[in-house]
Amino acid sequence: MAIGIGISFGILKVIYLEDGNKKIDFFGNAINLASRLCGVARPQGIVIDVESLPFLEQTLKSQNYVINEIIPKGFPPIKAAFSPQVKEIPLKSPGRREEFQHHIEVHVAALCFKEENGEIYILAGKRKETRELYPGLWEFGGGQVHRGETFEGAIKRQLWEEFGIKVEVLAPFATYSIPPREERALIPGLRFICYCVDDSSLKEEGEEHDIVKWTPIKEIDKYHFIPGLKEIARSSAQQFKELFFKERKNRGTSEEV
Image (cartoon, rainbow, N blue to C red; front, side, top):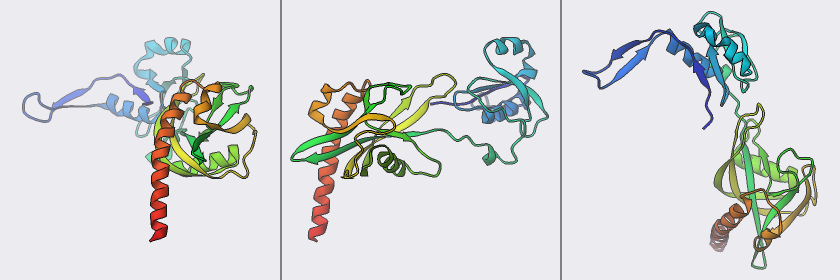
């Protein structure tokens, strides 16, 4: 789990909330300030109160930390060090906590299937050679969840924009993550099992893929997929069979009634 870290140094007071040493609590300016700095740090970022640790300033600069002034809520201006993951350095205290909440980037990925004549197919695309990550390898599609969008809505939009197909979402399948690189933090994601309801506008290629095609599950070994995706495809295909045919059976029962 990616978290932000705030660090401050100072004298703390200890209180015992129960008789003996059963329950202990701490309080003091250093704890309060560290808590405020945690709110400034981005996921995987670190913010350090340099004024309380002045001997670290040069060392932090050598490690690409940025030294600047910040006004933590409820505190006077202090000098702070920001790790490279904290791209924006706020110089003003937010009026409310909600005004300074993080907008974390989250992705979704689709395992989209269809069944024809007893054969199970999965939709796959070959990434363009110009892509930064995994150029030329095959994948199953997906992308970033937009602000105010549900996971299901993001999946439907992404598959329409990337591949020109309309889908229904059956169930979430597994979590995944896009590794951090350069100054970009780790991006969490969630895979979903879907089935195609209309592929009459299927794009045979797109902005991100040289080739887009329905591939029989039994033939995926013929293609060079991103590592780990073949195993995920086989596992999710089995779950698709169970979910899809169960839903189709329930739909048929409802229509008869």
